[in-house]
Length: 214
Ligand code: SAH
Image 1 (tube, rainbow, N blue to C red):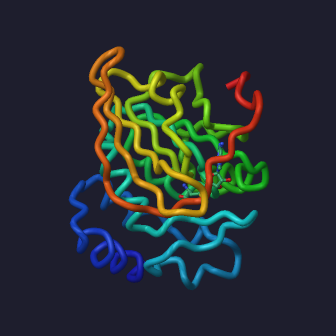
Image 2 (image 1 turned 60 degrees about the vertical axis):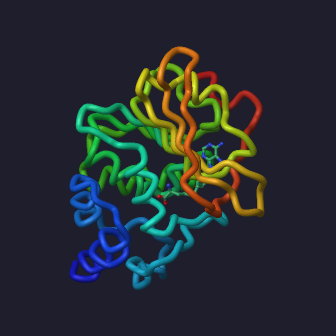
């Protein structure tokens, strides 16, 4: 608990993250529940950690930076792509009205569902599948967060933003530095793009026909 509060003060608030709802959610969510077994003692380190299947939980500051950029408000409907074991999903669920989350690895999606259920968070719909085409049936979204890097901004995700909606996504080639981008939908065909800096994420892996039922 003390470690968690220290993490929020030093790594998150100390680096300029201000959103009170986000800071409160990060003070609340036990990050040790969302890392690979055996790594719990490192849960409050200033770094990414393994979650299994070659994937990682993002550095806490990166999660905070993306969520703050997404400007989450209490009534928002949010889509998260690349849920992993569900750490960012848990934070989003404490800040937004409803959270939809997609994870392509079945074992991680099952692990996330189990953890989020154990915490008793009831405003989350989590599915296993390819999230690169979004979740058309649940759209439009006030915010979409993508936790894996895409070679370019997927058109389907832009189309699933509500007017005023924010898309936060790392864009760039696999294995290189990518650029964290924020895209705000101003109107039906009017998008404002802002870059938030250089980042390194695991790749967003698109499959054929994975989301027809979403
Ligand atoms: N948000 C997570 C970070 C997980 S890492 C956290 O807070 O811990 C990124 C995740 O994206 C990986 O689990 C990976 O399996 C998943 N992923 C990659 N491509 C995907 C796709 N097309 N659809 C859904 N998930 C995807």
